[in-house]
Amino acid sequence: MEDTNDLIEQRFKKLSDLRNSHIDPYNGRFNPDSQAAELHEKYKDVGKEALESHNINTSVAGRIVAMRDFGKASFAHVQDTSGKIQLYLKKDILNDKFDLIKKLDIGDIVGVNGRLFRTKTNELTIEVRDFVFLSKSLRPLPEKWHGLKDIETRYRQRYVDLIVNPNVKDVFTKRGIIIKAIRDFLESHGFIEVETPMMHQIPGGAAAKPFKTHHIALGIDLYLRIAPELYLKRLLVGGYERVFELNKNFRNEGISTKHNPEFTMLEFYMAYKDYNFLMSFTEEIFSHVASRVIGTLKVPYGDAIIDLTPPWPRVPMLDAMRQKGVPEEAITDPLKARQWAESKKIDIDKGASHAKVLDEIFKEFVEPDLVQPVFIIDYPVELSPLAKRKPDNPELVERFELFVAAREIANAFSELNDPVDQKERFLKQVEAKTKGDEEAHWMDEDFVRALEYGMPPAAGEGIGIDRLVMLLTNSQSIRDVILFPQLKPE
RNA sequence: GGGCCGUUAGCUCAGUUGGCAGAGCAGCUGACUCUUAAUCAGCGGGUCGGAGGUUCGAAUCCUCCACGGCUCACCA
Image (tube, rainbow, N blue to C red; front, top):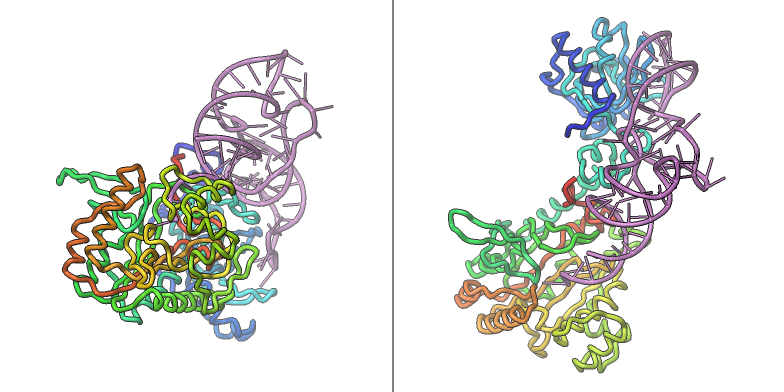
């Protein structure tokens, strides 16, 4: 960062002036006893006179975000993690130290202590007795009124975005609360949080292109995981009955308002449950999280109000397509399906199977209308190589995807625990991969071996945390819920 | 990767038909001891994203490039 300008040079000048007066503005020590919001809350009912008579001393630390200078007195606002509080700096109280205010800039981090009082407009304010420089800011902050709007700068210099745009900070605070609410919920239902490898020799558990890396000492290529599924199911074999992992996955695919190359996924597995149980359980999770974080189940999102009140409809995938007017013959006949898709201008790969064509039609035709929460259930077995078949129709699997706001937000199924069937399905995927399907699953012999030891019947689910946070914070882009989204180099 | 749009002072933005580069905030100097977008007076601040081209003359028109946004493709 070689860039400089007058404003930066002026601040460097103030820095050296301070050092020449034996003040190191990066070496202050200060231990605040209060935070801004805490003070506002604590004294909100204490009137002007009462506050004066109590003569309350306090200390806070934070960043100067506004200053209004009058010759022999100044007002400023200092911002800490909780909020802002006004400072009143008077020459006849600060004496010699008052001249140091000339070296103070918006953006500096200071510690102050003084007496609480109310101004004539009744604003709770600290009458400063002493202050200390804790960090000199050498770069000017964006404008006080319009803030920082440039999207590129907001993502590249998120730290500035967080300083000046309080609503941005709120989103990421909420993200933390959402994740905590999920952990609390799962832990209160007997789940253990585990950590499985992020570096896989065989990238499994999803259909996606992986990132590749290399381990020098072992002399092998490794892949960043695309999903933790196959490891979590090995833990079911090992005897854990309720496990979850809430962490990053990595997929080497396009970047968009709904996709970031690294994203956060919750996956959890419950022995002796099936996908029907998980649908109700999912409703409970969402209700718990939404009421904890935003205090309502009626969630504003864009132009819509999304009502998370359970129960949510459960619609078989093929019925959802029928309801949207996809003709029966397209649903039953592979050739007719392809012709119908092409007549609707839906791009179909040359080698695509009937199931894949139906999946494409679903995504194009049905998904955009799924605004209110709905479980789409019972997918073709070919699209779900890790899911258990339906007993009454072995061509379908016990699987659901949850759609909210026209996006897939969760994916779950009764887990396939038949090692023979699992091996056959892997072999079919390998065959598809040989034919050029880049995203077909890899064969994982050790996973099949694990199933051969016996995995209890279980249900498992993945929930896209970034998309959930988008929903609950009314964010239209995934980049608004990821602190440091991936961008091209400057 | 394709299409459309954008990039001007630290920030937010104007900039007419191609004719001297602008404002507000921020900054600097001065005045001001209850302001809160403080006020008043004055001052400084620009590689108009980059490189070419057309033209007497380009922030403005043309070409290419970079970055970003939206969108399509991709992504169960």
